[in-house]
Length: 79
Image 1 (cartoon, rainbow, N blue to C red):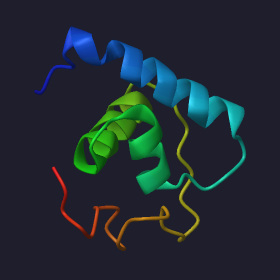
Image 2: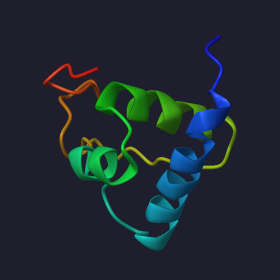
Image 3: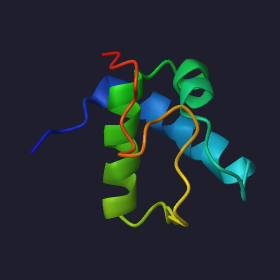
């Protein structure tokens, strides 16, 4: 299991703030990644961990996140 590095906590706090102040909306992954200085693949990982911890409730209505392909992965494959 991957652990979140302590130096990333401030970025995750900013991510939670941005997500909570923009509700309800479809997250724009490229913009969130840029605003938080988190790579897209890492952002998907953090969103999944936050959802697993029940800090987020990501609702899927058959729509995909902006900036992702149908699997929710970043099409650019950026690290």
